[in-house]
Image (cartoon, rainbow over all chains, first blue to last red; front, side, top):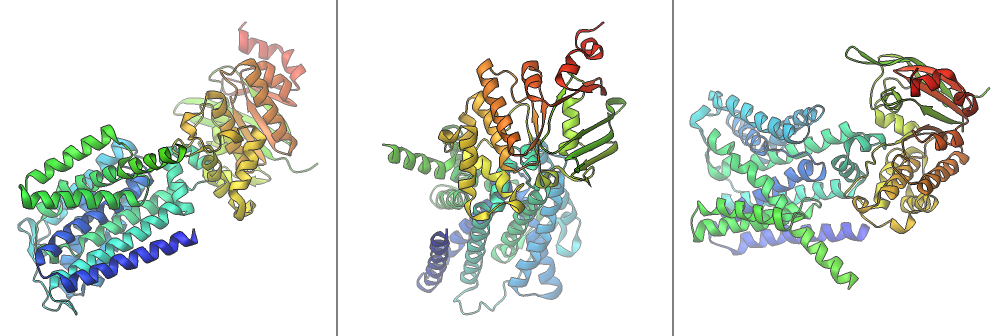
Length: 317
Length: 241
């Protein structure tokens, strides 16, 4: 276990340093825009998987948590001009609270009903934002990119490092949750909530933790988003596509482990970006759909599951 | 006299206007084996749901080792030492047999066990129950009798002082019933008090020190197996006038 922790720590450091090196070497800003989108997808997929994959509560409201994060960021930036780290923190807290509220829904709702309720939650938030003039209402808000970009060459390079850090942090949290005693309890809830409770698992508490962490992570992913796109309106921030991607990526990568959504996010997000550039921007939606259908019918345990099965076969041979 | 493990007094549970349990009392001594029988719909499962915390009773008190547990959530009751098996086995399907046992060891029994050798403790229990060779199998692939054994193994892993076995033998063959009976007796020998709900009379009669009979939410008889067999009220409840 300890060596595995060390491996993870070293791996994270290598990824972070590689990112730093990338900002020093690459000149074309396009790479950073693309990487940002993919890494944001990784964070969203990792977050969704904590409640959806580990705990078994499918959530269709990801766009809501993400957009609340984005709008908290917009509002606080406009009101106080806070620096980005504070905005991310505030967004995580706010979306985390929203996650906690979603967690309370699990008291009465399961399965499809829970999924629909989360979708409804997102729509309620969207309606509130549409009527909130301070952040631009339905017509949206423009964000001026700050001129200061620390010691990076451009602002997008800094944003890239920010989202990379959030992604690494999310992976660490997801990994901790899945490998700890909490993860074992979450898996028990996913398999059979009543049996879990009767075996001493504090199901409500764990569900609340899981939902809160999920929300906070999505909020953190949403906070830098306004600075990335510089214009945010409710229709784009609350777009259902964000929610669908957040579900599709863990499904394709594999929901059982913390690594699955990361792989799913990289593969699907990468493919989408590639196709947007090479073929057409509309095609990338089709790709997610086709991949999702393919994986659900042929490899329901995702890429990680396929790999594990392959390893098992080789070992028994 | 020592403190009883379980002391239920005047327990009443209603579902809307329907009274599922009406002022039922029962007590259980340390290491005692109690049979709970009654026709379908008499309230047996409601009774154990109230004791284990899956349902909260409307009236009456439930003392577990002299402590009122009526309002405690189910998981806390499990942590205190009340374990139950389910009528229809409810394994954690994505986990192996061994991992299934680690859940109660890591949660229900957490305060009472040595945390360093959880896997070894789980293996010990599997050996006692006789499914150690299945330890690494995914629990969804088990046969019906092995699923029942897993239910009991998991209940045992919670290190209970009270085990409630809800129809652990329904649908099993003659020899399989004997296997489960042996397991329950072995558990009881370790000092675990057992409440057995069962329709297989041979098993209940053989197993129980004392039997309580429920009918339509009321306790209609209580006594040793021999007394129960001869009780005219019990005969009427099962066979009609």
